[in-house]
Amino acid sequence: MRRMIAIIGVVLGMASASLASMITNGSFDIAGTIFVTGSGGVVTPAGTCVAGTACIFWQDTSAPAVNGKVNISSTGLPNGNIPAAIAGTDAGNISTLVNPPEIVDSTGFPPQTFLSFNNGGVTTVLLINFIPPGINGAAGCAATPPAAGQQCTPPGSLFNLQNLTASSSIVSWQFNGITSDTPGVVWSGTFTSQFNTQPFQTVLANLAANGFVSNTYSGNITLSAAAVPEPATLLMIGGGLIGLAALVRRRVAK
Image (tube, rainbow, N blue to C red; front, side, top):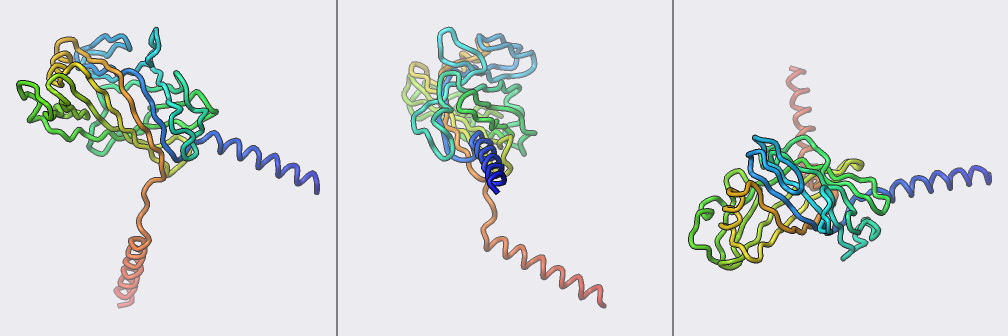
């Protein structure tokens, strides 16, 4: 009996340790430097984008900077089942997005690795499979002179650009996806990058002239269970299926 209890204890301990390495709910903040290229075979300090594609590269903010790394903030942690130990400098590995980003809007694309973790024993990997399009519209992209409140989303872009003043702007965008190890868990990331001395017209001009732009960014990533139909909706669906089955049976009987 004691031996059985000991075995059960070991199994439960292993299960607990395994579950502790996964994250399924909560939120955390990340930060670093982002490089966004045009589509002309561009060389950036964070990587080279082949001709005919556009890329998003990432760096940490250390000196010297490290490519493909992200810093995770300890602020607000632990949160949900995300442990405080997940935080730190270079606490995550963040993947380059190519031709980006893959497919904006539409129905999404096959899941691919976006963010993995180095701290806290976390084995969950965030997979990206959808990138919402920007919502500011292209009409304001050519507005002159720069002024506060002007907005712009270049055609086919995920980025929302807005002038805060005549000489400063902010860019925002979103990513969505699933996790590698827990079915039904989804994540959503909201990101911002603030240009303190440039309106978005200058940012776009630099992208055209240099082939890329870079700036620091911050992001908030939230994990949660995927939305499921309301009970009333499920009852309606179930009732409809039952009614359909009865109708089929009556027709067959005739």
